[in-house]
Amino acid sequence: MDFGVIIENLPLYFQGLLTTIILVICSLIVGLCLALPIALLATSKSKFIAFLPKAYIYFFRGTPLLVQMLMIYHGMGQFEAVRESFLWVILKEAHACALIAFALNTAGYTAEILRGTIEQTAYGEIEAAKSCGMSTATIYRRIILPSTFRRALPAYGNEIIFMLHGSSLAGIITIVDLFGAARIVNARHFVPFEAYITAGLFYLCLTFIIVWGVKRAEHRWHAHLRPRTS
Image (cartoon, rainbow, N blue to C red; front, side, top):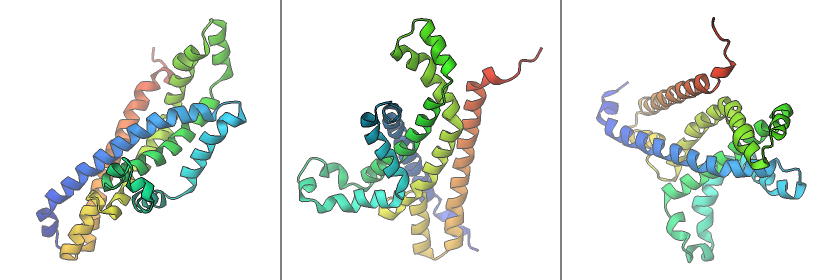
């Protein structure tokens, strides 16, 4: 094993690390902003209103992320109307296509997480809020949504990790992320074990940081559930 090659190419790995972090953070932020209204609509008692958000969730959870990304990156360019529109300025860029695919995908998974936790809100809490004279909007803002985010945190932590691992697909569409950096190192020096194990160690470190951060958030947000010491 020749890890001297890895040391020589560490700047490339750090560049890929930065690209991966930016892609994951941006996709999670956009995805969460999309997921909340989708989840709220999906919990509607009206089947007509809930149909489209549930169809969105089903589609993005039911198809592979790789297929979604290739549809956006390679598929949209075949339509002349897209190439002649202002959208082509965005869709011709690999980074933008990856971000769109990741954001739409995580929005589907996150919306399903939020939908489930919204529907599991204890009915007694809602009845108590109504008895205090709260409006529907106030109930969502002060009772349902805070409780939803607290209970959804463990599952959403897993989604963050899945999104991090899924971001390795960005290397397939010419983006130099961590996986893309490993591919370049392997192509230049033909050291597949060293190249990919190094990328794996970077992903492992990022996963550890995410797990630690989620545990800290759980400790803070679930403080009221811990037994009080005398």
